[in-house]
Image 1 (cartoon, rainbow over the protein chains, first blue to last red):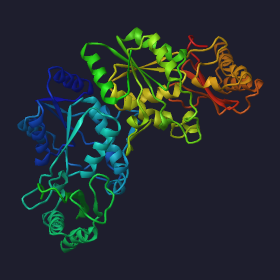
Image 2: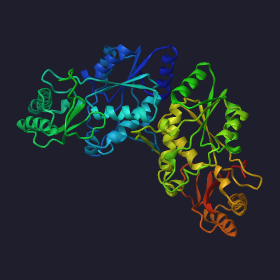
Image 3: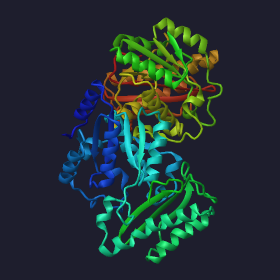
Image 4: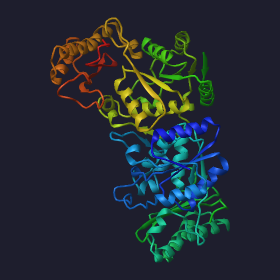
Length: 285
Length: 285
């Protein structure tokens, strides 16, 4: 596994792989890898013949009061895990390589970026879309792999690829969860033992809502209340949002269907967590 | 020369050309071709082994009160001229092919898009940058050819290519002028005979300013006044702007150098014209 820092070199290597007829999969990450990331590497290895991971904590997607500076950085362990998982190349650029002086062109993401995370984290998806488009240009992969954990992000990226005709196909892979349901996240390591326990209310609430839906309840407001109730019982009284929305447009719905997603964002202690569940998706949670 | 309407087909054809080892040049146009456009085809043919032109009157770069609907459309003549000039492929998409329902991801152009044209035509460069990025993704050319007539546009595109790591090189080709100095433009055909005559004041003013610069005058305000005076003598008393600016940042300067550009936009009759001159560029005007 080769670790590359420069844009010029990684582009050259990916073009070589393509010239050899390899099908190239790209797994963009911010490091602090967990089994969710590694499932993306596995998905790429199943479908592609070369897998490139990137590790870049992207300053453009953090707000001024967010956790950019304290975001976990575990590069040595990340590289060991990527090697173990079978990645062929890892791109680890310095920030100045990605954002040189004078940088000022951005991607203005689609309307699906506006609500929920977009409204809680102004500028977040602009930063995400911009760096992902840059990575797609730097590393011309055939397929890009993203996690469903960041449901709205995956939608923003799929919409960007369609709207801007980017020559790459996007795969969105299932959420990987702890045994007790907590969705894996690099930020879980911030949780105290007590908060770690309370955080399970999020996936429990999502499962409970899906069970009510499968039992015939389609009223979105009642499904939403099911989640809120579970959160309240764990002392999470002010989630940032619990949204029952169309899985393609993210517009709120009043009647749920199999193509409805429930999105949750909540602070547990000092840690902001997100999770989601598509009601018709029987593989998750 | 093959004329292609669909994204899928033009991408396939360009990828075939690349696979054959051809060096592909791209010349994006809005049609209504004149000798300026044809000079871009020639420049591409000098440097490349396959030349692809596009004809698309891009609605996203016109403001609501601008001339989108009456912009000249001369497709049959355009195709004849492109064939004659030696283009290999022409991409002529319908609007719905480029902007299908739900389209909502844009390029937010760099800070060089803000002043001058950007301030007179809000949203113009956003529309330009978005469609050009899309064309670069649809038709993966090695080189893109643009005219210096749209000086700020060329800068916006060069900046976009650098900032977003687009794998294409940009060539900016000299302005083509009528014998009396008027810069060629598809909009010149809107001019009445009288306005056509008055319009020569723009290039005359630019030349006069450069001559003063070459004679030792570096004070930007006096060079600007030279242009304004020439315009006034032809009855153009309220140009939209006459800017003496750094040719890379487009920030106004007080002392001119060889790397200073003078940019002009003015309405002559009902027709909005633009022109420019880099003071150290001895090839123009």
